Image (tube, rainbow, N blue to C red; front, side):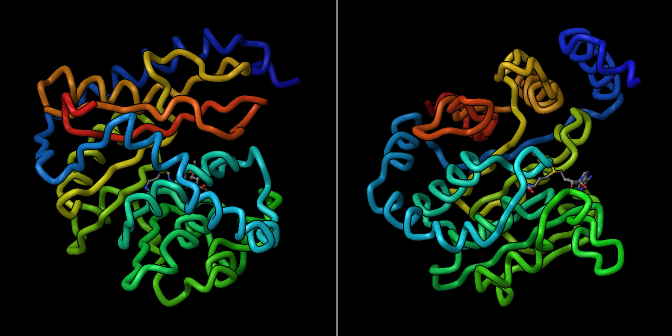
Length: 276
Ligand SMILES: C[S@@+](CC[C@H](N)C(=O)[O-])C[C@H]1O[C@@H](n2cnc3c(N)ncnc32)[C@H](O)[C@@H]1O
């Protein structure tokens, strides 16, 4: 029997917070330039998520999306988050995206769908593992029928999607490109997210957006399963406590279902302070 399963999630969360807080303390203080961050408000998000045009585009994608046969609860973003990312990219008219954390390509496929009609689309997706390895085929063990690369091919995105296999910080610190939208969904531990956000800020085009996944405000569970991943909240709290003029705007409840019979999402935007 796996004894860890008997430990209540509240105890696991307290332990994770202690461990991650102590690792986070070891990281030297970061400097952040939020000058390129877009100011987005809850009202902007309401418009984007309730846009009839984007909804109609999304509905038209159903046959293609059904072909993806993406598994649920295997670490990829859930169907409600797939739609939220699609709406955001369409609503913001983003052309260039950096994604950290490719995994089974659930978000990669939907980012590609949102970009493919843009005049100059570009997506770089980074994972520390070779998620498209033709020998080990890691997607099979996760009950996914297609590799992330095959999903991108289905979307018609092979010409504008670039897969990179390396740690996020190594990639971002050496990256010469700039992006309209950066999605951070890789290592969610506090000490990594604390370092990723300042580097991601440097890679933004003016008016750019950073989207976080697995943000649990105040480290309170969002769903009935009681689970909390504390890293993103701890990292962003430290950045705020240190006086960096950024804020976090959790997307909260979406107009459609996400997971565990709810509309709640752990997606959150990094915004300039006092902008909402
Ligand atoms: C939660 S999954 C991402 C899910 C993905 N966005 C999707 O929707 O399918 C996190 C991924 O981040 C990768 N990862 C973990 N640490 C990383 C790091 N330091 N740099 C880059 N990728 C990392 C993991 O290998 C894993 O594939």
